[in-house]
Length: 302
Image 1 (cartoon, rainbow, N blue to C red):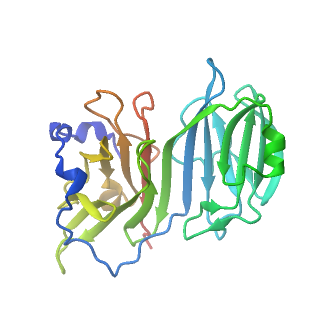
Image 2 (cartoon, one colour):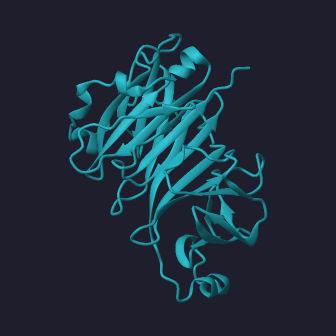
Image 3 (cartoon, rainbow, N blue to C red):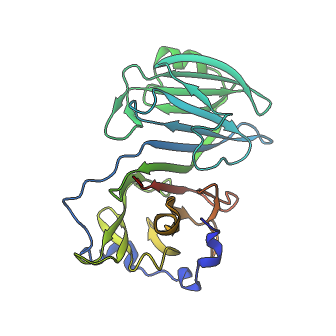
C-alpha cells in the first residue's frame, strides 16, 4: 500500500450533524452474514511515570488456538499497529506469574493472573483477571477487575500510580467474511460503541463493492464503487468528538495484501489527520492523535 495522504480531498473537513444521530440507508447490510473474529488485538497505553518520562505499553492478545498467552512491549515511542511477532516483545505463555526485566532504561516488574479469566468470542479477557506493570517502583499500568486481590494490593501498596491513557486499539482479522465488528470508546466521558466495518456487493450479481461503517447499528459512512475509491477518508461525529474515518483497500483489489481501516479522534483545532503506511500496517502521528482504532484485514488467497 502507498501513502494515503495523497488521496484525500478537502471534502473530509466538513461534518454534518446527521452523522451524530440519524441512521443512513442500511440496504447494504446482510443480516445473515457471520462477522469475522479477530486473531490478534493490541492495546497501547501511554503512561506518565514522571514529569520527564513517558512510555508506551502495548498488550497484544491472541486466541488460544493460535498461541497461548499474550505479549507485552514497552517502548519510548509509539509502536507499529501490531507487535506480536516483534523480537523486542515479551511473550507470556503461562496463565499466571511474575517477571522482572529491563526496558527503556527502566526496571520493570510484571504480574499477571488469567487463571479464571472469562472470554467471549474475542481473544481479550472480559473479567476475572489482572495485569500489573510496575516501572521504576511506580504503578505504570493496571488492567482487569481484580485490583483487590492480595497479590495486587501487596505489589502496589504505597507506590505512586502513574497516569495512563489508552491511545490505540488495533485488531487484525484474516478471512473472506469482510465483516469486522469491535467496540471502542472515543472519549473519556463517552460510552463504548459497537463498531462494524463491512464490505458487501452493492447489487446481487454485480461486481461493484460497497464499504459501510456502522456505529451502534447506524450507518455513518457508505462508499460505493470501492474498487475505484480504494483510498479515502470522511469525518463523523461520535459523542460530540470529530473522528476521522480512513480506509485503504488497495491491497484487496490489486496487491493480494491487507486492507487498513482507521478511526481516529482529532486533537484541538486540527483540520486534517493523515494516515501513513509502513509494512502494510497503519501508523499514526501521536502528537496529534488522542485515540485511534485500527482494523487490519487480510483476505485468504487460496
